[in-house]
Amino acid sequence: QDSVSAGSVKPLPSQLLSHSPLAYQCQFLNLGEPLPPDAQFKLAEYLMEHQVIVTFSGTSPPFDVSITTADGENLQEIVCPSKQYRSQCIPSEATPACVTHIEEDGRFFLQLYQDNQTAKDMHEDLQLACEAGAAECTESLEVGMPCCLKVVENATWQRSKLVERSDQQVHVYLVDTGRTITTDVKCLRSLPSKFLKKPPFAFECRLKSVVSWDGDLHAKFTDMTQDKVLNATFSSKTPPFIVSLARSIEFDLLGLSGP
Image (cartoon, rainbow, N blue to C red; front, side, top):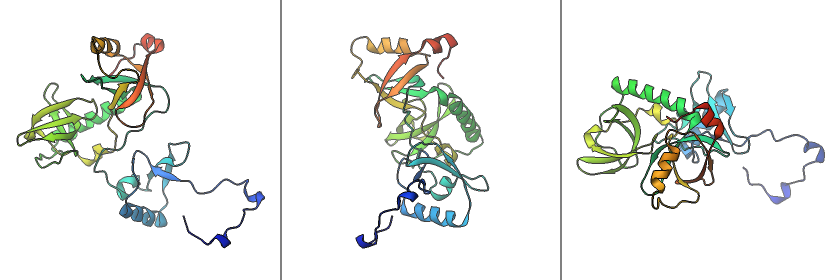
């Protein structure tokens, strides 16, 4: 955008209105925040000298885009390397989803069915990376920072976020299931940066008409959602997301189940 004097602005001839604007207003997919000034400078400098491949994911401006360099690198990682998980994209229509965890206060966590295979593949890559020593031992992480740890019950490495710490113990939020666990601070590992590129797979939610699990609602909800694929409709944009859940005869007939 440029600032000009009012006298230099003239009406556009009608014959030029038949041509669509040639500039597309875009934003990096899943970034969730404006580019900082240094990243804006890097982006402008790179685009002045290089051709790139742009993939559009949105249908209205600002368009969500992913940009790939001629060498196949993600330009987003060049101009603004990840230090936090990418922002979650909220579905705009009813979407198949599975309940991964239920809290006592009325909250629960959903994973989109379409993400099941992606999450599985990523977790397999994380196991290999951690077993190869890519995740370094760290006891200096600050609250709110991404990390990973090995969950004792199933002996798998999980992406996580540090939510509280004391001298010896930490409370860690598992970003792909919604569970919060307490463990020894020595169990924490730094998360390799490649695993920050995918947003957390667990969406923190509340039912549209249920504030808390009064009476036996918790047990009923567990029974109705366990290992089920349901249609989830999101009606808010910030967590905990307000959602409506509906069973699908089609999903039941196909025998679809959660992760």
